[in-house]
Image (cartoon, rainbow, N blue to C red; front, side, top):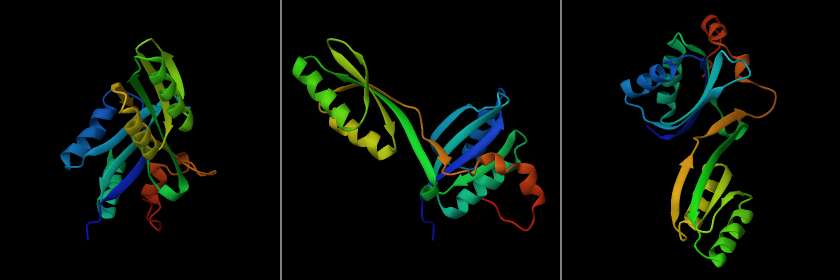
Length: 183
């Protein structure tokens, strides 16, 4: 059976020009769509971390991980277990707020979601929301009644809970550890 589900991949790559393009080409060349992508440098300025979310079957996710590991620019690939991971996204929402009453209601909604009002004008409010996709979707639906002027999402960031890190699993270790199937 091809049960499609969300898979979150943490990928350490060289922090240099063209790496994102190579990774994206791997996905598009195999016909996979990236559902969410967030990239930034790590504590080591020579290394970037990509958090990639893709909707695929379990088997396809394993194939993607194997293909990513073959890229020279990739240091490490880890599929994150949702039960053992922290997932967060930053969403900025600019909402029409032409009246004092509208501004008050929007601020109340933001407070309920533990969001932050980061900009106020006489005609709009901008809210910063940090959370999982269900939280972002819920506040977006409520604020839609006021008129969303602009919305931007960073893409999902994810990290394993506890002491385990992606650094503990490097490409070189995986290549020579034949007794262990690491996905």
